[in-house]
Length: 113
Length: 116
Image (cartoon, rainbow over all chains, first blue to last red; front, side, top):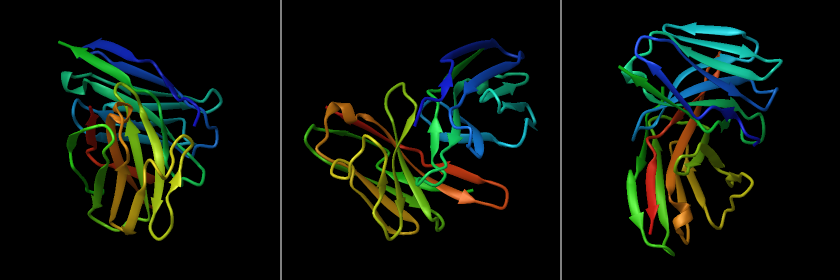
């Protein structure tokens, strides 16, 4: 599929908020996802948002969706050193591939003490 | 949730050889997917594997290079054939689990392949 765009790096101090941005490509995507990948580990689904929603909050995570601009963001409140990881934005592909996902390149989040 | 295991977890192979990666799920699923994650890159979908039919390959991936089997609803294999160093990647399988509210994709831990 076409490219899902994300900034490559983000560095924040512990306790601050982190905001990771993503621009996706398919306006017909039903779901949009945020995955977390820690070093040497598999992909963990953090949260998702249905395309007819503007916002979703889940504990320290807030997802904002601007469907008009095809812009998705993930805000992590009170960021901790354990949040250091690569965060992938993904859109669902509505095609013969069922609900396969089109991923961004990932944003590497570094949280410093 | 779904528990997915992959074998091997990692391997180092010589160019020109082939490696078969296994993916086992703890419950029956209709759709399984194979992705590749090249070093420092995002995940790229290789193919969709449905039980009882041939896999559907994405642009840039062909069956001769990446043959896939899906003999039942809990198992699939991906073979990386005639390997070259460019095939060095993490290969991940995933499954789709639907619910009344949304479809979630669960990923296996990945197989880290290095081709010398």
